[in-house]
Length: 430
Image (cartoon, rainbow, N blue to C red; front, side, top):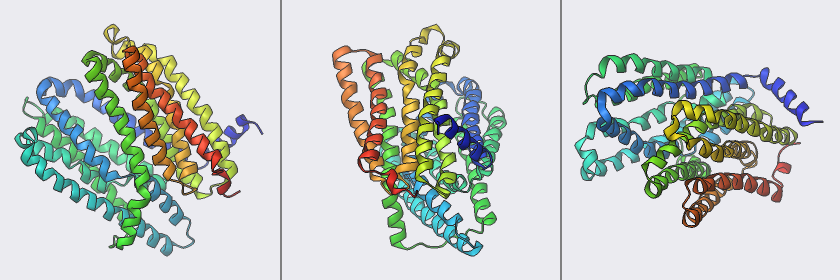
């Protein structure tokens, strides 16, 4: 049987399921959110000015850290348990199992939210910029409440991203007229933050209420052992998310510190060119997971991994083909070096898409999540060593950034090696 036949059969199966709908709505929310940001950016920066907008952006960046902590990698283990609950034979059993999953994850996240607000107190007292703009940073910090109330993982697992994404799209669209009407002066950065956080909160509250009322979810107090086990099984995925984000943020920091702000602007543009297709590729695995996990088979996973190799290469080639006109359109001639840099970084789309496939369809179903965190730790350390070697021996931005691509391709080799070395596919049902 050829790979082409495998892909055709896989597509037909997905066409008759709700996977394509899930992927479409999940991607639409990401793309539409990016477009809203592009629409508002010229207006907001003109009204607020560079300094006040920079203060807003700084508050948002600071708030990403507690936000990342509160998600804690719950999404994949929780999605796995939801799909298993949906396979139970009767309605009462399904509702009881779903209520258990939601209650456990909600409690685990709530404890992290409370811890993050406790951490905010000393920051508000002893960090001058936060103390001087306390309400602005407190509003930005409230993004963690939205993480708590909008369990995207639940809607992915139940294949109802239509609901989650529609809510997200509606509130993001609402923020546009509110911004144009209410943001009128340079000191309105607090108003702008309130619009962004407030509209998102309304959408999150609606999504949470829909989940409880539509599916008959009943929140209850889980046992300590259930909450502890939730943290335990999610920790490898948290390490994966944390070090993956740390790697990208550190790359931007090092380029700015070692090469200068102009080179950082070039890297930022190259990153923008490859980020959207990277997120879209990642959404493929997120949309596929509930359907594949519902009746996971060794042969199907093997076919899927082969198909993902081809899909990853195809997406990367499309980005390479479009990199030149996108660079000229977005940055013009002053930032043209972003074009060769985007070509250097483009293979990371393929690599991280394939690695994400191993995480979703090999490591998680076989209960080998330790390889998820091990892969990211090895990737981070190897990238850091390669970056500084390239910098000290060449002092070239392009060679130094190539370290990220080499590290990403190393992740693919690592996943392939441990899968074969430990015969992980043989652990899946025939």
